Image 1 (spheres, rainbow, N blue to C red):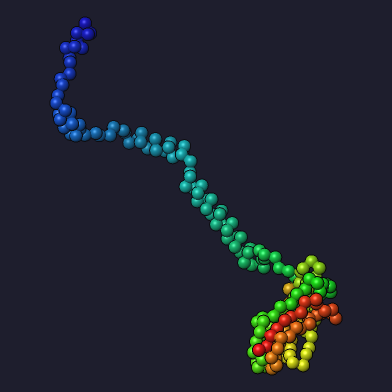
Image 2 (tube, rainbow, N blue to C red; image 1 turned 90 degrees about the vertical axis):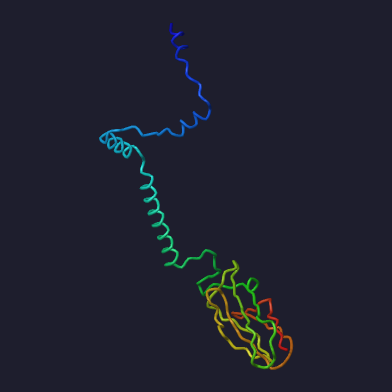
Length: 190
């Protein structure tokens, strides 16, 4: 009998346009929930949900404090990210073989006005600068040597300015503590 009743209530087949028109005219309304139930569900969802925003705020504050601490530390103290060659003990012995000299510029006019800067670096056996040593340049009649900084600083550097009124190429002997460096400064006056 159920089969017969099912067959009796056979749905009516409508043309395709009718279904589309009926689907467009449908209105969907949300289910009605009592206000008391909404507030209970909202409170439960807030309690069970993790506080991601609060966590991020705390993380950002901690990160900013760390960055500020590192910045103050690097700025307030003398920091060296790249090592400097220096020995602060003035009684340290320098090694003539490790020490070196160079001139800049290599040539100048022989007018007595233009100067060539001769830089001497006095280093120990480990290649570190030795301070407090008096450097000297070999003297000739043709060259005028001005001692800019004859005592080596914490880098082992001593500075001299050389000028001349006579054209020529000169090899200047350099030393300190009555020891002569094997290298000579080569300068030209034109």
